[in-house]
Amino acid sequence: MGARMKARVEVTLKAGVLDPQGEAIRHALGSLGFDGVEDVRVGKVIELELEMQDRNKARAELERMCEKLLANTVIEDYRVEFL
Amino acid sequence: MGARMKARVEVTLKAGVLDPQGEAIRHALGSLGFDGVEDVRVGKVIELELEMQDRNKARAELERMCEKLLANTVIEDYRVEFL
Image 1 (cartoon, helix red, strand yellow):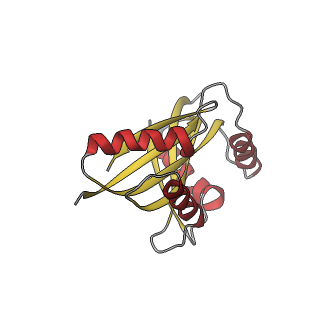
Image 2 (cartoon, one colour):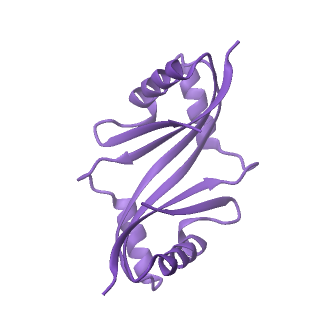
């Protein structure tokens, strides 16, 4: 039987990739009267509860999950951490 | 003139709020052969570049941005940090 662990994957757009959602937020903040917002970028954070033997194996599995499903590695970076 | 600072806002669903996107990811991971994924929750991370006088004022502004636009405080929590 494995141990229960909690992991966090952050998926963000690579530098240089246009972020229309972030741009829309920046614009909306300006319309609402918030001054001084120069740039906005939006990403995803995915929290997973895992039942696995050990942390090294879990990290390898999480990286495979990112490559296969969680991130689009053409335009996105991902970062795995344990909580 | 203010200083340039970088902030990070994390917006996550409150505990108990159903997360269909997370559930879809959990299901898809199972279909792809990833075992041991017990729960998945998805949130947003918003990175902002600000031109503001000081950090305390910036934090107050960011909290107002969350209340007004970035988070739906009925179902979501938010957390502000500086990078």
